[in-house]
Image (cartoon, rainbow, N blue to C red; front, side, top):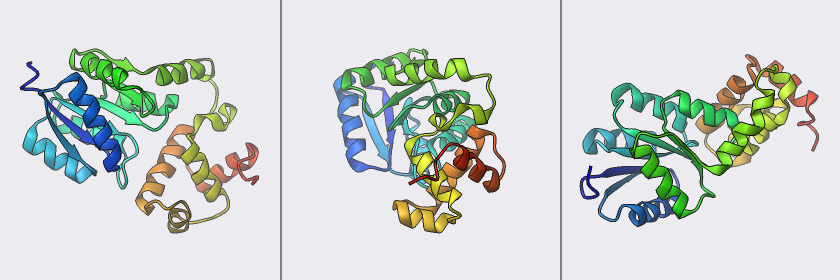
Length: 218
């Protein structure tokens, strides 16, 4: 595959992040054809029209998580390479992205050079984990066999801990969305992810978990 024929799609709901990623792409692949999408629906339409070789996909898209979108993309196109991008790395999210068929994971704190390395590795058929995600996975390894309640709040991202705290206070999805200035669908996506991570199947159990680990203390 030549630089001129390479097609890359950037999927992120923040225009400035998309612009930054596109600048990094052009530094590594000056002649690549780069498209962008700000939502899952835009991404699916662009994939259908452009048939990209590589997709840089934000993990925390509004409405539908990047992980769910990755699963949908994989169902219709097993050829395209997926490089997941997130604000922060936690081992469960890294593991989940790889399980749905992504070939790489990196945080938005990574350098432009690291982005170039990640894209080249993924396009070459390799699996790429940035330094932050490697460290997160390594920290979790000694705890992997423990029950969810033994893991403590470290298993959750900062945003997930915020949402869990609001849930523990009995707030509904709409109230949480207004408080955190995010969409109700995003709140619901995070809630489902929290329950999967902790292997908890009810809001009552989530509340008990939050109380046990001190998340209800201001």
